[in-house]
Image (cartoon, rainbow, N blue to C red; front, top):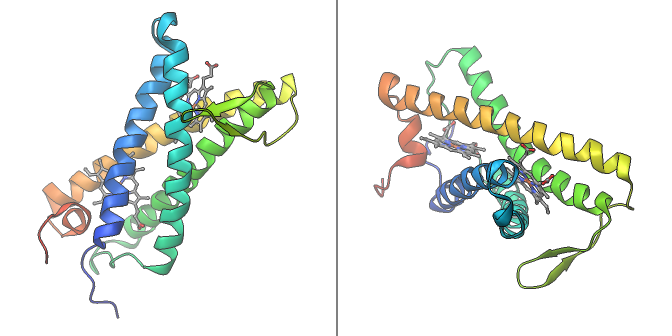
Length: 179
Ligand code: HEM
Ligand code: HEM
């Protein structure tokens, strides 16, 4: 049985840096849609670049996670809560990969060159097609809402563990102590 009680420093670094990037992306996305039109182009530029960075980090993180299992959840945690924790974590991994891929595919279907970071060109994932673009555009917004609500539930669960149960689950990811 594993005696590991904390996520590794690299797992924690990836978790917190990606959490900050993803929360920023949700706000940037909302700002693109609801903000002042004169900021739209600059926001989309930042959104595409951070989105592709998230895709790369999520792939690295998923591989790292498959090689380094998470510390076990408390033995007295009810089975339903254990299931909810595991299911929501894998859903978060899936969304961290799916949202940027759908964003990239959607811009491919739109048919314009996809430029990120100082002029780097992304190859199109599919041929241009207006109908596919419309579907992917809706899917991107829907997945962003799903990510937003899953993150809220995740935050609630983390605070429940940290403030109510006090069972070490929050400090497994959040504590800066060496042991
Ligand atoms: C984790 C990564 C991502 C998150 C959380 C995210 C989130 C969002 C959100 C919340 C919106 C506004 C949705 C709405 O209400 O309609 C949006 C729009 C958009 N996203 Fe993303 N996105 C991500 C990745 C990407 C990537 C990688 C690309 C492209 C390479 C991209 C391209 C776009 C574009 C072009 C729009 C605006 C489309 C329009 O103005 O009609 N996104 N995104
Ligand atoms: C966009 C924001 C976030 C995302 C995408 C995210 C994603 C994830 C994922 C995928 C895991 C599972 C780790 C694994 O098993 O490999 C995880 C674990 C965890 N996260 Fe987050 N997280 C976010 C924000 C937060 C916040 C704001 C908190 C706390 C206030 C938090 C606290 C935790 C804790 C305590 C764990 C460990 C759970 C356990 O041991 O089972 N996360 N997070």
